[in-house]
Image: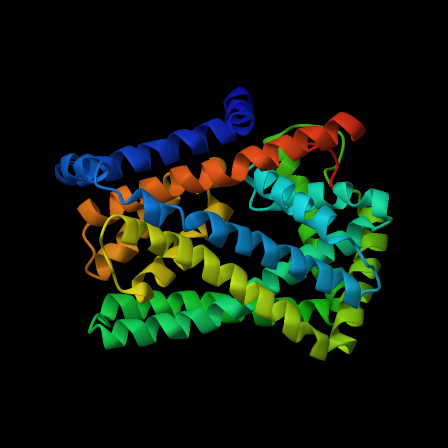
Length: 354
């Protein structure tokens, strides 16, 4: 029995990968009649429309860089635009290649900014604030999506349910984060609980005598984490500009998907695209495959289908978007990542986080 448990523990990623691939195969089976039409549609693309993806992605990285700059400035650190732009490219690469719900990216970001005398806790706090602002800004896009769907007469019960679930998840997660991080005692208790739980989980998954998170070091990090948040809250009016950049980030990502629809000659309801994008991005937190492969596509197709957009229309668009988006973003991220580790050595993605 112990050998069986150990085998499952050591092979958990493989098992989850297999489960995800099986789910993707099942999806392809159910839409098999649309696949022939899908591949025919791939040959009917307006290449000039796809060129619009380049300035939109550039604007997305510009907004992301300015967001980082503003957040660091609020806590008293002035970092250069060029350095943060390159760090953003590297971070995107790491989050795609080392899928871990964003944990690998957070760990790498702290290591990446050590030369600028940025503490790991402060870098982590900045990442969490970026995520928080991205979530808050996306809530306004959800309202916009419902408005577009209403105009197009596509507000059915399914779409309302999807909107309600996504909005609830975003609002509740935002409120819980702010409530927890705003009090030193609360954040200490919550993070201690998750630290102990995570260490136990990782000991089961990957038997080792070493904790993933050192509880003593974590105590210091928690205090730094709280202090950084309180600095930001004292200057809450300065958060308006970072929030604007977070909104631009979300808007440009949705716009990139919509541009691919246009390239295929379809002007679909933008509200459906916004909701599909929001739901699919939760794939990054539950999939162990790079970029949420399989789950991302399945969720987008399902949401778009609920909005009346058939798979033979949405599938080629999603495939084209995923392929081109990867080709545009990962090569430069890979280049700068390799350049960085050639100077400082490979970051310990599987090592102790704190």
